[in-house]
Image (cartoon, rainbow, N blue to C red; front, side):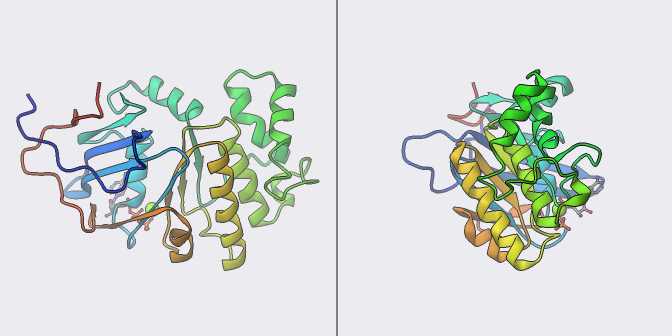
Length: 254
Ligand SMILES: Nc1ncnc2c1ncn2[C@@H]1O[C@H](COP(=O)(O)OP(=O)(O)OP(=O)(O)O)[C@@H](O)[C@H]1O
Ligand SMILES: [Mg+2]
């Protein structure tokens, strides 16, 4: 079936390693709009990549494709060599819960739970007993500068503190990939810089690959790599070749 050769891989893989997450030939259309129009992208463990570009360029859509939130119209996504975009919703949901972490612009903390319980939630959802989950959650507070705030409700935290709680919640399950969509957009410059520094350091410590969507050049500069999107394509990268088959690119699929 695969008669057209795959496009060249994106640049700069750390020597000898396979990406933990790979998107190939990704296309997503909304009506006539190709929000993502043929993107190849890799993410490596312990490394961060920033997705930049103007509003409407497809950053969030690309993140949602990579995270299994949206299904691509063409192309595919591989997690540690396993194709995940064709799995059923239940399996993709399990991957999102157990193998991915998410930080959004608004932390979406549950207001009636304490900060520690919010962080513990993903572990409890994965079946860890409550006490063990809260103990594990508490260990994240000091490294993220949150010591003493474990019992606070989200409404009693500053924006930056709440976002660090959201980062702890995203990392407590030691995900393989941490996805962040504008994680500092609601913060001022100083809090944003501190938050992204902590996010990148903490994610690197658990060995997660980080994919962060951002408008902020300061945030992008802190990441190991930057990929710029325009009209659903990576700037400087070839789009999907005409007639290329969906997925199954060399070296990635099973
Ligand atoms: N659910 C949807 N239905 C229809 N069109 C959509 C949908 N989601 C995104 N789009 C369109 O796809 C394009 C890319 O949107 P996307 O949200 O990925 O951009 P973005 O780069 O994240 O922008 P921003 O920086 O404003 O968040 C836009 O033209 C947008 O209007
Ligand atoms: Mg967006």
